[in-house]
Image (cartoon, rainbow, N blue to C red):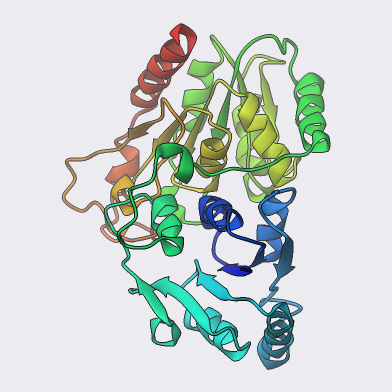
Length: 341
């Protein structure tokens, strides 16, 4: 039985789709349709037969691109398509390709075009929700290992991360903590990473990860640390090389964004700072020893499923009132637990 998985959402969602892919691979070949960025993070995954790119913003934009991808999917002669990304566009694309069996969530925008609708379990982690797309409703709940995300950095990715550490840190025998200060959503960006980095540098090296848009804040963070105790890897590594680096770290501190999911896949303990969103949405860290920072007493939390660019009430207390001392305390306990384990 051949399966198609459609996941064209954010990078974090792509990472959380890997348990679904692994489950389907037990039954037969699995192909994945994803974004150009998604292909970079799913590279080397042994559970995937073929990665197909749907570049809807550039090469596959408009009707001609839609038809090209539809034709490509038609050639695959898939038994079932699993709509991990539930837009109407994705549903139309799969339906137009002639795939007879189409499975997706009962809450999705494209649900009218599904042949099987699976309950969206709001109380579960999203990795588990996606896993249930492949399962009967009477199946046993998954064990934790079944729903853990997984990534597969290559030897080259691992060498790239090691080289960066040796080039930019004086003492690579010292543990390091990864900081991930970025997010696509403005109100998710905790403002006190520089303060936190100074505290961490007293006992561990600090490495900043992210894309090109985080390079400036990475420079700011590293510039205030003792020479050789900090490295800015934002924009300097590919996504799987960044995952390899995170896998070497003692811990990661980040916002509710993709790096926490990379850390889950690499089983690196994570301190995630939640502001406008909450972990109950199903996107918290999964690595053993991970913890959450946030102000639970605020009546305005959560204010958005993703996190708006600006605070609707103008005060942004959900992030401003999470202090660097609060987060450092959580990190210290995490590092102590790891050391004693």
